[in-house]
Length: 278
Image 1 (cartoon, rainbow, N blue to C red):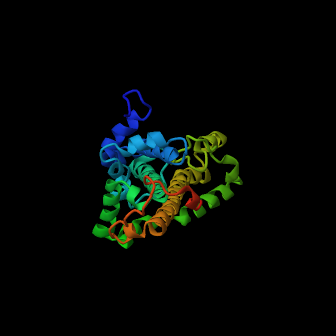
Image 2: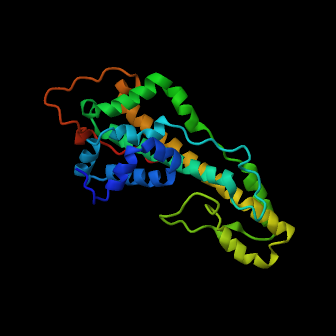
Image 3: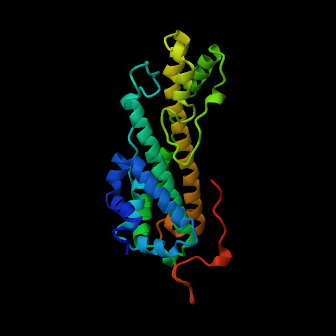
């Protein structure tokens, strides 16, 4: 069992309230799913994985991002932000959506690994139920369509580069340092605070104001673009595992019966190959 003092105890608490965590605390839920994915990708975590599989409604909780919908984006998301107004509600909604997309990415990758490494009779019944729900209630084409949507606005990026050109600067010199804690938002690609220090004496000049109005909006556009690309790649891995390893699930057919002398649900090691790289 997962003990109270276990490092996984917080994750199990989040999983109990997965739909709410997905909509209201997506950044925290994204970190929890990222940890689960690291366990599924490690050959040394089989014992922990088995404990997690046996948790009540585990697979429905992991798949909550796939059964739910990310928060809608505001219509004025890519409107330049006047200096002094701050990021505001549209930006907060966009960042939240990025983390919801990241939750979907991790969930798809976890299920893809589970489907790839399990035989038909070794897949948990609750996971089969979730996948059948997707196949029979919404149909695959309808379910996949939202994953293909893009909200990227290239005109914002073009306007930012024009504003930087007027000031004679190369934005490439002001890129945000990518670290494990790197986050979506107004500093996603270019470091706003670093640019603010450089232009502190000129902040009230029109060209400088234009730059700082466009900068957080462009960073949000790139945040969304990367989050959307990641979820499409994860969807491809999920569909690869589903269609090629378990076509019966894709068509909502009965599971094939195990062959004589079959294993305990793990796919034979000799037939295993890595999933295609994202």
